Structure formats: structure tokens, C-alpha cells
Length: 228
Image (tube, rainbow, N blue to C red; front, side):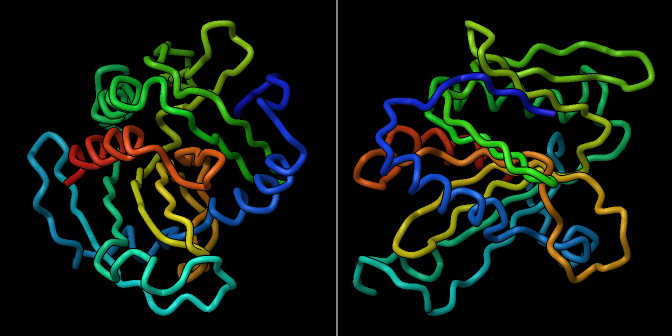
């Protein structure tokens, strides 16, 4: 599904250790459930071309160990999630999902991003977000979007027909602010209360000070605005 052949980046052993411990758990932070996707209670105030809603959720007191005091944490209303659902009519090369993926490249292009795929194994890598996807129709598999670095050492492939929803979520975990873009498919089971595992998670990468650069946050907020 996703291939990355890049070697560790400006990688001290401490950075790689921190990434290995932190990133996978973040892939599930704030993940919606199948029931959440099916709910009709979500407010729908997006423009017609996106047509889906925005939902905010409150953050309870964080019980995990954190280096920051409570006064340094974001306010409760800061945590928020935006989402859009897609159907079969959105998955062609000129559909709404392809348009959103193009927006991702245009808005997040060049932003240091951690790509995460979780299955029986976990694959993750940090690269600048590719500036534009390549769209190709591959027979019965339908439209495939490829995000690739210029030197092709990183590529991520999404078959649009398998993506049923996209969420943009900002949450706080252990004193860290997390900005995520997640692509969801169907779970294939009846456990509607179990969080859906995303097919692909993209997290804005934090620097040496464990903070996401303001310019990257601004880009994420701009992309989220397209789902509001």
C-alpha cells in the first residue's frame, strides 16, 4: 500500500526512538467509529461541493505523564475533528475525493509529514508532503492516487474506491499537539464500537522541540477549512 525506501533522516538515535514509541499510538488518537460515520447527528454546514459536517469533541483531563503543566495544555474546545464521507460516485479521477487529494498536495506540499500505515506490521516514514498526486485509472481497481517524492524514494498509493471517509483531527496527548489527516475504509466486521483503523495516517511532524512549526499548522488549518 505504501512504500518508503528512505533511510533515517537527520536521525539521532533519540529521535528515532521517540518516533517509534510515539507515532503508532497517535495513529489511533481520536479515531472515529463506524457508528460515528453512520450518525445522522453530525452537523452539516459544509459547502455543497464537500457536503459533509464538522464535529468538535471535548478533551477530558489527561491522565498520562506529561512534561507540561495543565496550564500549558490547549483549552478543552481546542480539540476538534472535521470529516467528510465519500461514496462510489466520488472515487473517479474527477470526483470529490480526487479533488481533496489534490488540495492536500497544494496546501500541505513541502510540509514535513509522518506517513503511517498500520497492519500486521507498522510502516512509517517522515518526508515532505508531495505537492501533487498522480492519478491513474488501473482497470477494475479504479483510480489510484500516488504521492511520491521527486526522487521516487518515497511513494504512497491510495485506491480511491477503498476510501470511505477522511478526517482532519487536532488533539493533545501528553503535552503534545497532534495534527492528523486520516484516510478510512470499511472495517469488514460488526464491532461498531471498535475504532476504525485508518488505511493511511499523515501526522504533521514535530521538530526538535516537539512542536509543529507554525507554518505547518497554518497549512493544516487551511486544509481543514475545506471540510468545514
